[in-house]
Length: 204
Image (cartoon, rainbow, N blue to C red):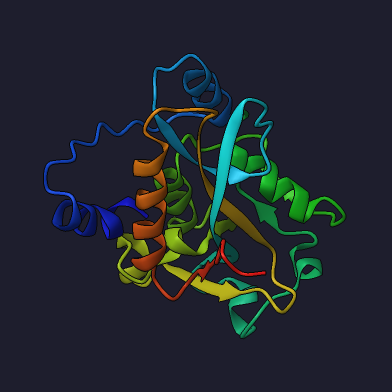
């Protein structure tokens, strides 16, 4: 998401200096609570005691498949279609791993014990070379991503109701610059791609 937003943030707030850090959810929550970071973008739900959270958007999951995989014959897939197929996951501690396991929980998917990835990019590369398939958030499956652009990975949407996740901006309760973060949340919502559904916090 960040490459889509950084130009818009710089244009709107040219004097804002962003220090970006990627980490596991548990680490980010701890950093938030002790004041080491000002705000965090996270997939909900999280244990947010002492924190404020403003939902930004919902993002569907899609299935990433090696070119020529049997499931590429389908225009859209259902969760039960994953039964018996090798599903690649991120290593322990990543929220995306937990989300994928929740989606696959009732299916007899074959989790690859031999290979786990440390990042989304590693997941995409393993799919590209045919190790297995994986679930990706829609923003991580954009056509501009290398292996997808090269035709090594094919993306299939899930049939309705498609599994999805909600992304929120979190900060400490009574953070002194809360107004600035609310403005940032509004800017993010205005600059999201059509692959996600913006959450209107003012809606009844």
